Image (cartoon, rainbow, N blue to C red; front, side, top):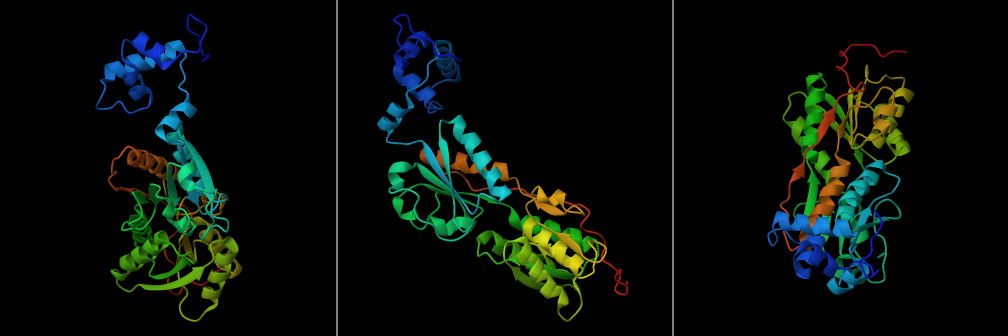
Length: 348
């Protein structure tokens, strides 16, 4: 829409909008600043928005931000831009931010995880708040002291530094995986665990132990692995070459580890899923690129970003968002099948 001019040829102002809508300039500021709820009626808000649209009015954001002392900018801290999950988190956060006149600066931890320098000389002056994944928590050390509102994603609920949290029901996702495999008759499990120290991976390990501990005749081994295809392949090859009964199900902390696990199984002359079933976590595009396609847990990444940005906006309004775990869903595919019989020969 092109910006129209008033009768005098000047750019329309909030005073012009107020006159056209029959309200005060203060009311225009409340409505166009998205602070009208509970203070202005729906009808009045609609009149103001319509008048602004008819006049082609656009607020002077630079001036408004100066008056408010805000930059209308949020920082999103994630482990790595190469991970599809976090790219989708960013997309969700940016979509909500744009609806409220905010921008999102994406800041990856340089090595994927671990500490990183403060990206701004003065975070307090450059930002309104921070949204961060627990996997990149180390990158926040320099920012935590800047007195900025912090929204944590997929993180320890008792974190005292977080003004709000958005968590996934990770434990339920792992329970869905174990229920699926137990129903298929699997009793010998190998947990391919991410070697990255993070709350989300700790929850997966604990939920897996708890679920299998309640099942009779079940054994569980754990193999830590670097969070990469090659790291997973090497860890599984070592585990399968060891002594003792071969596991019939590999439960992987994410889809990248699962891809490496599938490669390792084949290198040992075994088949997926006839000899060994493999599961992942995340439901990345990779899950359907594998052959056979991967049974995995779908995490609503975009919604995580949306809820994270919404929680930050609520904190900036002086509200306290109630924590609520987002549901996750098991997606069964061809990488899982009934457990082989104990005396079933391995295919040549």
